[in-house]
Image 1 (cartoon, rainbow, N blue to C red):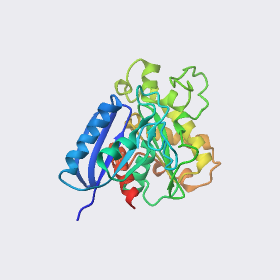
Image 2 (cartoon, rainbow, N blue to C red; image 1 turned 135 degrees about the vertical axis):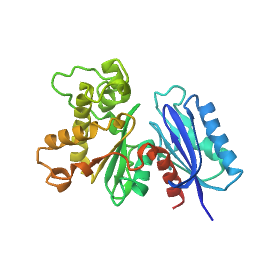
Image 3 (cartoon, helix red, strand yellow; image 1 turned 90 degrees about the horizontal axis):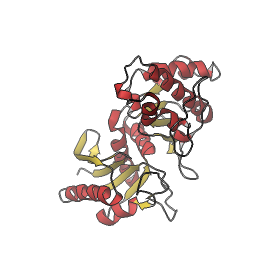
Image 4 (tube, rainbow, N blue to C red; image 1 turned 180 degrees about the horizontal axis):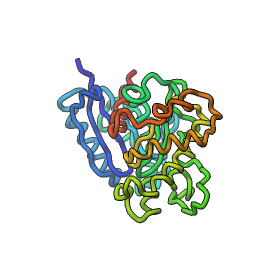
Length: 296
């Protein structure tokens, strides 16, 4: 008998909901804009209720924007917490889904969810320590250490690390909290704020991408030194600019300057900095993987 799992990729711009048994067997999928909590969660619940009328849902995984509370013992577990997203602060996400659907619900960050999906089916297979970044509307990082998803005091906020800007770069950044943190310098809206047009309107040879690659490589230098990941996976809308990958690899290798004596860095950079194996479906399939892990 096929086991069906629900997944919610809850982004700041849109929600993607799906029911699947594997990446190759997706029964149904829908997407809609992220508006108010009541409207958006209502649409998600209606989708799963319609599916549950036809098949049994084993569990649901939620991979969400944050900040959020992923600690099961916390009184605010399952909440979106201090997000700047209008009206979403202190929203009981898990509580609403569980009350309506009465199935086990797993909850984590969107990037941890995507990392879990990549570990199960994509570019993280066979690894126990790796990092997944999304660079898009915002910047976030998650992943695994020793085969377990990263958690701690709350959850990693790698997108808000401070990095040294390249010489002569006076762009102030757009993060409402930290100005020129990684997200404030490298997210899609930062590219637009710097150049006056959206990134997809810039040619592949535009100087924007040299600066973007430099910023990302500086952040990845920190990640390599702190976490020593076996691989770094870079996803999100900005990384759809595939010309960024060779630039980032070259700049990271130069920045490390032979200090990390690993073949992966010295000779295998093409397989060290990679796009998601699941492509733009990493998010929703990661949510499915979270749902599976809740039962596993």
